[in-house]
Image 1 (tube, rainbow, N blue to C red):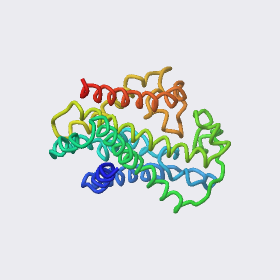
Image 2: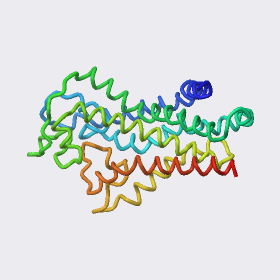
Image 3: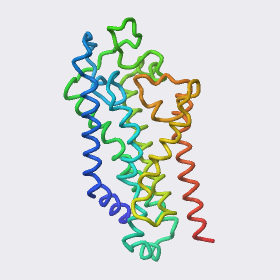
Image 4: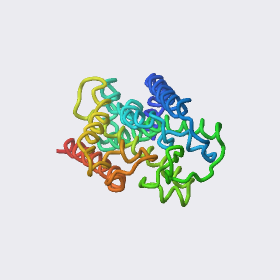
Length: 269
């Protein structure tokens, strides 16, 4: 546990967080400048703090930018735990005191927590701003009856049913999902670092993988497999959004678990 605490402190206090904070500010600036431009001469909707949050506001362009950068933010925060131990020269000493499997598990655990925090920081920050700006949650109908009405979440979005039933539960599940997704993206970077020797090479790996999945799957009639599509909750109406949301976390967990098992077994053999 001492190793886990040390790694977490190192991840959460490192200079990389200056980059994460700067990107968070940039994403939110884009979001609010595009969400509330004067050109939208539209009637006020019912007061709801979702209107000031990433992933929910109907017009903000920061949501897609955030979802594209999420794997990079997560990997930047927690994806270099194992590489840091190796490059600092501490890894042989750790392996002398503990089994390789234990060290790998601790690196994946600390990377998951730090990556979850880094990847979810823009969303959490937008939540704080939203609650301060509009501390209300009244229902906003998702049926767009005219060009002068815009909803928070369109009625054909895959989360609209939950949004109608329990908006707080939708918020909690969204935050939890984004945290776990970010943590697994960071762990994907940690797994990549098992096979790399160059500094920082593991950081862009989750971003590249997520971007390729998005490009390959973003075709008419088959879109929705990528979290860049199904987590843009306001208009997440692609045909495969439900399947994509259900499979993304288990598939990532299986990949991380498989690489961990292979790497731990390779040491034994």
